[in-house]
Image (cartoon, rainbow, N blue to C red; front, side, top):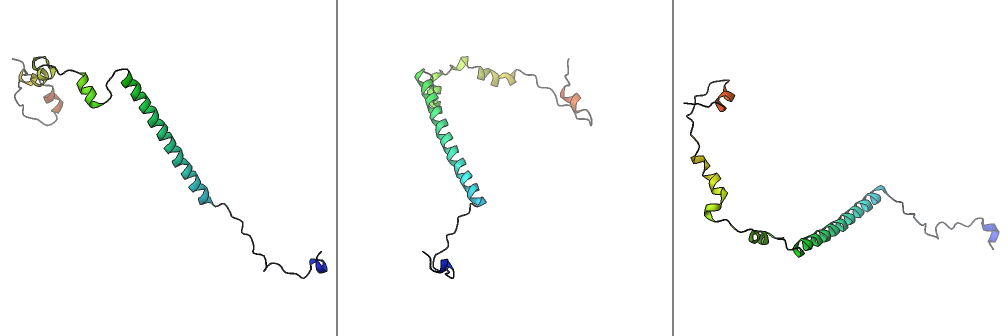
Length: 117
């Protein structure tokens, strides 16, 4: 029971005041940023595991997966059968056109000018 009905007693100095933690705006921002980073890391881990599963499925089917395997997959053509040699030597077959003096305003005409004998 309180003496004098609790009147006249000041308890504010004897009991420390409990501070209520307020949720600040930057707490929410940092929390959302952390959740986003964790989410992206989990998704990256999942995508990497899925990629490796697909690579192993391709390897199990007998197809090349690495650059070395792909290089060994296709045989090199012999010197006479390589079409790249024909393309590189095609400029020898072209007729060299003489240089035409440029006139102002006739650039497109000069590009498409063909001299026929």
